[in-house]
Length: 301
Ligand SMILES: Nc1nc2c(ncn2[C@@H]2O[C@H](COP(=O)(O)OP(=O)(O)OP(=O)(O)O)[C@@H](O)[C@H]2O)c(=O)[nH]1
Ligand SMILES: [Mg+2]
Ligand SMILES: [Zn+2]
Image (cartoon, rainbow, N blue to C red):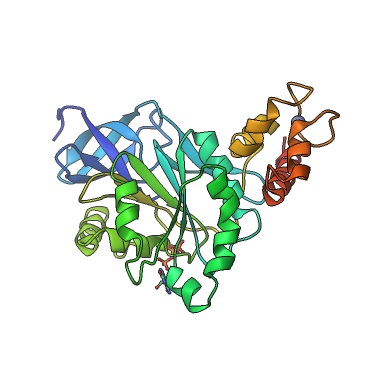
């Protein structure tokens, strides 16, 4: 196949030293990449050249719209996926989300310039525990701030149609703690998931396909969906206060009244955000989340 023409494709799965590239006809090839082209991430749009049937080499990565990354406990960044339009923050009653989990992901989505969506999965368990009111209360500040919130159950199918509609255009990624049900939601959305997984496994030569690999799926009614391996605790990298504020639209809305243009809304005199939090116009939980996140990422700058 030497002399085969360079062609466009998209990285749909990443295995460390190789990646599966899908061409415009939907065919999969297991590719390595030229040193000058790398690194390569799931969701990347690339130019590649076939080298043998089902194999190829990535020669260039197209400029990325964004790169969604997480930081580990030491603050090192680990990119997860590229070119995402929407970040679906999946939480569930089990495992119970940490106090700042949702807020952190919303900051990361804002950083990437992606549309956020909060999804509470395992709603069947919420209802069985009689916890619907408690969850509604917990979600109210996010709804009030304008974030879309959906409730779903991958097991009963509740909310799956609404999720499918929300994902019908562009590329979305499911993020969230391990065990919240991201892969189960993919299964609920994709009737022929096993066919796709079979094709991926065969093309990659990997016997099984677990969520140790970030993988892009095509939804039958439109939209692409990336399933990523969950992490125990999602971390933000070093961020300026302004970048943290980007995940708090209700705080940004009050900031126009602050005395100082670069107010961090913590200790400054004449801070309109602090006043709004005291008056209850900015929910106290969100203001506290903002201050705690600010303190956490400040230690990394
Ligand atoms: N009761 C209930 N259980 C669910 C639901 N969705 C998923 N589960 C269960 O939750 C467990 C974890 O589901 P997964 O889909 O593997 O979770 P995940 O988020 O993909 O986990 P990682 O791949 O480790 O990040 C499984 O035992 C699922 O059967 C749901 O809607 N209701
Ligand atoms: Mg999974
Ligand atoms: Zn302020």
